[in-house]
Length: 292
Ligand code: UTP
Picture 1: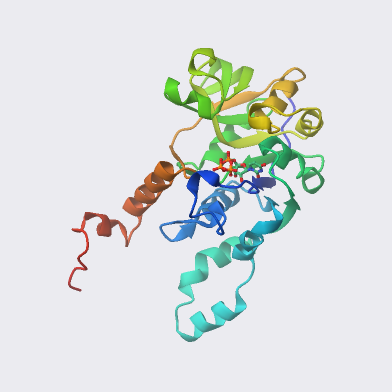
Picture 2: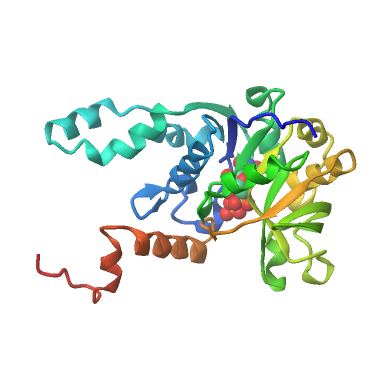
């Protein structure tokens, strides 16, 4: 089997409307909502950087430029913090942005996740790449993308991240049918977007990480509107499956869909509990600031 080409680029589709979390997202992009002290998208970019992906392609809509601003330099703020001896407050973000190159691709209208990936084509070119849906916030060791890269090194083809979900929840996801190969890796035999529970081929739901090969682009180009009148990535992958093998790996870790209100709250609680300084706050009685 040929050695797979290294994956340097990660596409972050972020041009959706975020309607499930309104009114918070009426003006503020969902990806900038904070989970404790970092915006949602920063968790994803940190995960990509930890997996050796240094080129981030943000698929953005014209109304969400503020998302790019988060990763831009902040000289005025930096100067004030330096004067106050508080440079450490921005240190993590500064280190992260120093190690990555961010570019954007514009999705003028939210025509679906498949379409969002398609508009990244020029930025990605003819090489394998990752897709990160940052509102699926994952806490895993090793990080989810690293788990996927380990599987990718063993198989010859795209790798999707999957998780077992309750049968009644399958209708919110793309779902795979697959033959288990051992070690949580499956060879995908079919994919269905948002199936009814009785039609779902399994309980293995695709969650927000993909390692894709560039042949997904022509497949997406030929993919028409599917579920919800949108161009679905799952449908494009189904088309690709007719031409080449596709694989899936089960996540070993904790995922929260921070794109809906209960999932967003669970993500906050999860990361707050783990936070070295803020975790203790959750154990305090409400409304009372303890004596210093
Ligand atoms: P979601 O299914 O979470 O859709 O998209 P959404 O529009 O962001 O949110 P809701 O459903 O209205 O609450 C999954 C990911 O794909 C991106 C979103 O930004 C999110 O990261 N996406 C979706 C696009 O970039 N473009 C699209 O046309 C659709």
